[in-house]
Structure formats: C-alpha cells, structure tokens
Length: 379
Image (spheres, rainbow, N blue to C red):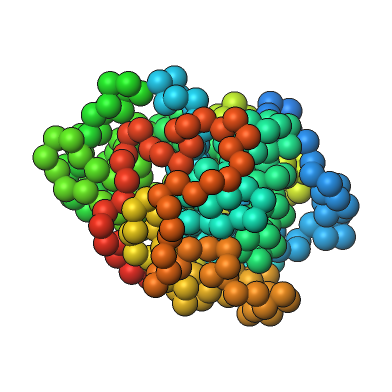
C-alpha cells in the first residue's frame, strides 16, 4: 500500500512545485511591470518638450486609451560639429492600433519638396529646425501640425530622438544583426563622421548601426546610395530593434532603454498615454508592421515624389486608423508636395527662414541624393 501511495505523493509535490513556480513567475512579471512603470515615469519627467499639446489631456482619457495613435517620428543630428542645424535626418509617419497590435509606417524622404504658402518651398527636413528657432517650446506642436496640414493626414503626437540616444539604445540591446547592402566609407572630420562598413550580414554596434542608416555618399571610393535606399535601411533597423525589444532578453533591457529615452527623446505624448503605450508595446511584432516607402525622382536639390505612390502610402496610413481612403478636403497633393513631372523652379525658393541655420535641409555627413531614386515599394 505504501508503495502505491508514494507515486501519488510525488506527483502532488510536482504539481504544487509547478504552481508555486508559476505564482513566483507571475509575481516576478508583475514586479517587473511595476519597475517599467516607474522607469517610464522617470523617463517622462526627464523628456524635454514633454508638455502635452492642446487637447492632449482629453485624448489621454481612460475611455479612449485603446484608440489608434499617430506619430511623426524623427531622428535629428544635434552632435557637436554638426553646425547646430538639428536636421531631421529620419522622418516617419506611424499609425499604431493598440487593439489589433498592428502598425503602418510611412517613410518620408528628407529631401522631399514641400511647398508652403506661409513658409516657402523647402526640403522636408528644413521645417523642424525652422520652428525650433522660432520657439523651441512649441516646435513639436508646430512641426506636426505643419506636416498634418501639408499631407492631409492626422498626426496626434511627435517624438524626436537624437543620434547619440539612438546609438546608445542599440548598444544597450547588445547590437543588431543587419544585412549591409553595400560597402560604405565616408569621413567628415568637421562633425566626427567616420563610416566604414563592409557589405554582408553582420552584427553592428550602435555607432555602426547609425552609420548604416545615415550613409548616402562616399569620399573614399564606395558607391552612393539614395534617400529611398536609406529609408529601406531604416525600416530594416526598426524591425531589428523590435525583434530585440520583444525578445525575452530584450524585455530585460527595457529599464536601460527607458533611461536612455528619458535623456534623448523629446515628445508631446501625454504621460498617461505614453505609459499605456510602453506597457503594451511588447505585443507589437515586426511582422505586424506594414512599411510604406514611396519613391520619387531626384531633381537637384529636391526629391520629387511619385504622386500615386505617396497617395497609396497615405491611404494605407489612414486605413490603419479606420478612416476613409481619401482626406475630407480631397485636395490635390501636388499643390503641397513636389511630384515627378513638375518643375521645381529656382534651386532655393524664397520663404521665411526665421533665423534657421543655413545648414537646414543639408546633411554634413551623408551628402545629397543620387541622380535617379529607386521606386518605392511596400514591405
């Protein structure tokens, strides 16, 4: 009889042990979620320009916390030696649906021509430093409002990360495995740029990953690449970052990532909404992101967009939000955006510069686009 009971006792001990382990794991997960929540609070306190925009507090109401959110995501060069231009070197529109855990990202070429009645005709990356020089406290709100009006799409919030913060984030996650599509060499002693990458699949650290997404031209014999090729690389990096952030090892690094964000990110996202977004972000997988990178034709000094590709990309963005395919104004996009087949006029059309740096719209480390830009594609 004793021998028959022994297996039952052993099985019961195993079951109890499993339940205890599960309880501890659940408690650990809850504790870590609380830790991240605290880190998010700390990061929000540090973020410059984190004041909510007009009406933002109403948007953050709990009854709407799962509504789709839209962002203008940008990366800027604020390093010493960059000339203080704060150029937007990376620009993306992102529409995130927290209920479906899907996102649509539209890459905006930095050399895209925008034609404003009030601010003149300039490259897309001109406008953030312009508004920043007007009033740094309202630069985020004015920039997102400007792009929303020009492209006729809703943009709730704007987030800006500087190059140093991006590089440190990649290092915090242990680097990224990326497929470098070509040999890349470029040096600029003025701002410290030193790009030296070989073609092929490889592990890149933070500095090398930044070089990978920024590279456009060479002064050391390697080939040039276009604005659109850079957009494709940026999207490869986003997928790599998401893979790392949502992996078991990556989740353990979120505390450090949030510390870096607090030091490197400016945003006008309300605190409560950003906390909810951070805690639900782990459910977003790379395969659930639809990337749109519309193409165009280089007509110095601008990239003229293929109008149909840009319109298709903006339709996909609206669809993620459950909006009609066309904007309510049904305006002609070519009135605001330079499109292929039109003349750009003078190389530097007149417009208000508001004291913006003469380097606005230029890239000290990467040069201008190639003579013909590759057509955009969806991924």
